[in-house]
Image 1 (cartoon, rainbow, N blue to C red):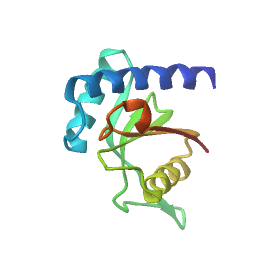
Image 2 (image 1 turned 135 degrees about the horizontal axis):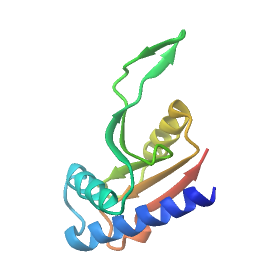
Image 3 (image 1 turned 120 degrees about the horizontal axis):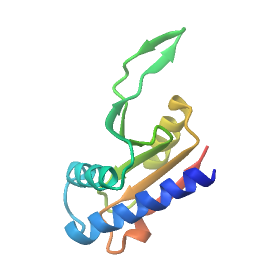
Length: 124
């Protein structure tokens, strides 16, 4: 868990840098590519828009799920640019954690004045 905490700290630091540079109000996709860039600059392995299949009857099926960022093949980061978090946002994160078998996820809403108000950390 210590390694995941270190990764989490790096992600949050990078997200703060992106938020300071861009501010709130832009599309989620803009924050997505900028955060991915920052994380790669920190030496982290990042996969953006990673397909997440559903296993049904022992068969992998593409149900259209996409993880915004998978960091170090260990932590899911879901990005939003919304007025506020809605229950569906956390449900989405928990669904991705369950389907992927990952234990830790971050939900980051860039449409806030202070980014610390827009970060949720969840453990499965």
